[in-house]
Image 1 (cartoon, helix red, strand yellow):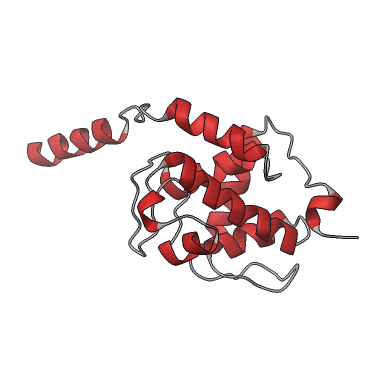
Image 2 (cartoon, rainbow, N blue to C red):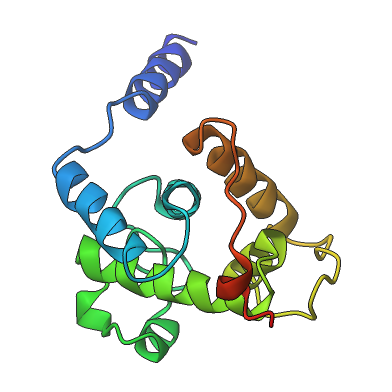
Length: 165
């Protein structure tokens, strides 16, 4: 029984380690820089990073998504980021924000639809969230983080950024 208690304690200690702060300034600067180019609220970008990689610029998913915003190499190429650049926090954030900006524009500012497409696949405008897989939990978690990072005030994407005329 003692081995189990030691293992449990080790897991608790390991999971409560402080986050790696080597990239904090670079990540903050990258988020600010892309905000000047693509109107995607910084709080939303932070929420996606939190859910996708827990702020780990070297994160790799089982599906092969890489970096802070967990871009698949094929998707990254479509937004102008090479596979080699995906572990560069600034390039990864630029690619992820470009993708979010396109999705927000396509879905006319519907953040839920944009997050669903970012996580799973594109869908019809204002279609319900698929109730299978990880997507419902993903969308919920990102929205909760978004609200926290925004100080409880969610930002509305302006009409002109939505593509509506």
